[in-house]
Image (cartoon, rainbow over all chains, first blue to last red):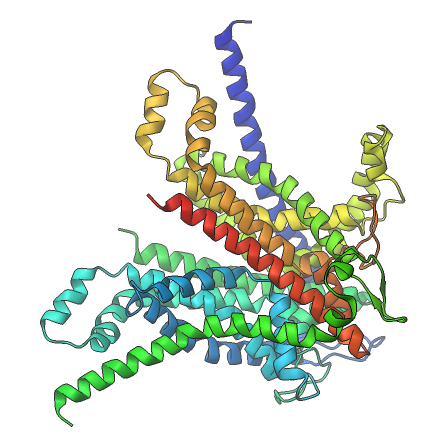
Length: 280
Length: 310
């Protein structure tokens, strides 16, 4: 065989394989999304959002308790995670920019982003559940906050570093102290980016299950008291999907559909926002 | 206080507050390590380290605990998931950087990001209800009738195909890490200077030859670092495997057997542990997992840093 034809055939084969790989990736995405829609759609009713679960074996009921619990836990995580994240990111991109400690913490945050979330669950269990003696919603919120902080820190740092140094110098030249430069110039320049980082971090923690298993646990009753075990959508999905009843499976699919759509919408919104802000 | 002093004071205050917030990361990491060690002390004292990781018995009734079966499950599922995910994600990255027409690039990028954003519990549940029956009824019998007939290799596919096994869990895990690896590989491929590519095309190289001899060698460090990060994530993934692995403490020789990983053991047994030694052993497992994934991720960071240094 002519060497040129051989090279051409090799080229064609390698490229077809790469197209095939891309097709496999897309195939999974559509397969999973389609499956969630197909199974979940028929269980999406008003009752799902307005009623609490019925005892096993009884028809009907909804997941109001899990929706409310999920929101409360996420809210606690946001109240703790966002300020720590933004302030920490500020230190890394401004005051600690050239310090060794700053670089070190930045690297640690990168690692923290990927540390197994179930380990964070066991940690929070050790410090917030075992001493108290029972599961509680606060612990779930703290576990999610611990996952959220490094994500927000890293995006804040990156977004603030993108603000041109000359802008800061212009403000320094007017006699502004550093904290004023940060709060009035750098934050404004990086606002969209930081906001997107927060959105994405919320999307990230909203789907977390493992850290909630031993912190907020689950509760089949409606509660707004975070001192007791608090239901969440994700843990409910885990319990219902593993359970023996068909309507539990249906509810799990419905909850999965709601949570997936919400997370994908937030993710897409975040990406569009970044694109719009940094299009030039 | 003069105005200047007040300003200095405020600046110092802001600096200290931001410093404190950044230190939270360090405090949490040290805190995780210390509290896990503290909680697992009874198990560390009783079983030691080498004895614990080499004992394949996990018997809550007689309080004999060993991590070997969980460790085995963790490592086998991770390695198998990586073996499936690496070629596919490199293929996707090649497609996205070198082949994809421009109008498709954005859509393809979004699709990969969406796949990465789907929570792991959704993967797990989908794996249980959709993928496991397909694997058990179609794919695994097929594998048994083909590869299963080959001597030695065939024993990997022995047993009754139920769909709740190592193979299904690894498949779900690989789908989870593909988008992550693909986007890292894409980003590093894009760093290859256009001039290098063009000079290779200039001497008549085919597209594949440019990819193989220019793009891949140029970005191998970055791609390798990305793979190691993905491996760190796969080690600690819980929900995607919890549904489809079966949580059975055994060193399975067939890929069609149920198994347990450290994460699955924790997820299923943590709230049920009724004795102190049981609890301490579970914390010990968590500690081992934490140290393992931390070291893996730190190594990945180190590789990526070495590479980006001029």
